[in-house]
Image (cartoon, rainbow, N blue to C red; front, side, top):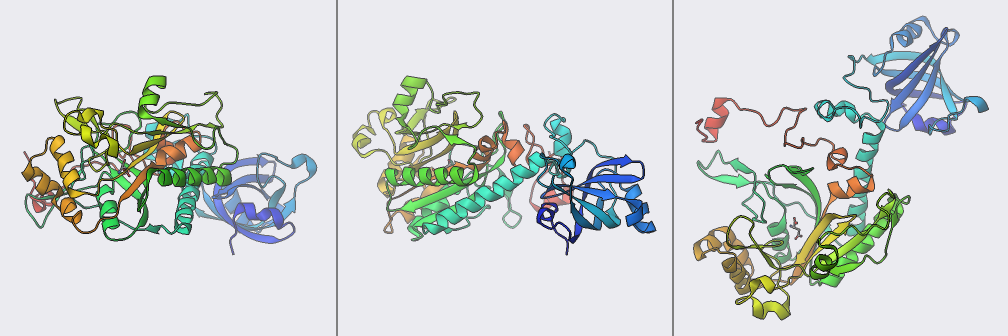
Length: 462
Ligand code: ASP
């Protein structure tokens, strides 16, 4: 049975079967040294002619970089001088007894035996499947798995259910432009891809789910800025019968445990996380996502902070109207309700953001659960009766059926993992990201479609 490279360390003297890629090769006279790479790490393999049959000897001779090979061999301890402290398998090597090439490799477009950070990103993204072979990228994949599994286990242990919500839906206007999907069955009609599961998770609360979470893909058709991605992943959650304090504490404890258990080389600068109101943050730091690190050059410092009491509305940058600071389902603070009519801009909300080292890594709010108040908010946002009913009629109707007070939050997992892995760009922790200008260079998306495919969904070529 094939074992992982790193499993050889406690198998000295035993015969093992290994499969992996040739990461490096050194020929010293008749002896061949190969660094064999698999998902677990590197392992030194030694090929000595006297130990191998003729066919194996031929095979080991033709094994070039990135050829995939399989072998049997005996694990042996390396002499004190030959040990390599850099490798997890540095105290052993495997003396090959049989050797075979499984699959050859073309010349590589770039080397993957080191950090690929300095290779052109276009090239890395075109050949993402090769880039993922490199140590750092593999670690980033693993960290996503470890983190996601941690969140699932943690929330499940608290009684949360993981519930999936649709990707083909109707708009969830939270400010961003939505991707639209033409309907073949209903000419001229469209689904949109959700920018978050916001409405569904609220309707799950109406449905009595009480504690929901989901590792959800969100889609936003925004002009690409910085390292935004058209699709990204959130840890999304919602709780019934809750208050702001409970949600903030839940998140805080969960994140502290994530870091303690899985990133113990990092230190959280302040526990509990500092809390600032939006007004305080603006006054003190002129920002709603202040970077509270003491030493910004210290790569092990994690400075979390909560920013609370966001204004319910803000002025639109492009039009003369109010828009929601978070989204239109956010609950205004009770004591400010009286300001809704005369000075809506002064109304504070139960909305909060989680900030890490100057980045917003999450945000959420308590939600409106009263139909009349929800309708009033839509009106202040400039929607008329008809628009309210066509876009949000289902929400208003749902709010007539015994609705629990509820609230929640979503954590941006790509950004969180990027910071924890000390990566500057979220693309580094996304297995198959798009470029800064929204292209998938590996698959070649977006791409034109055959005319018939367009006709089927009732799209005319202009
Ligand atoms: N749906 C919100 C967002 O995507 C998060 C929330 O309010 O729970 O930012």
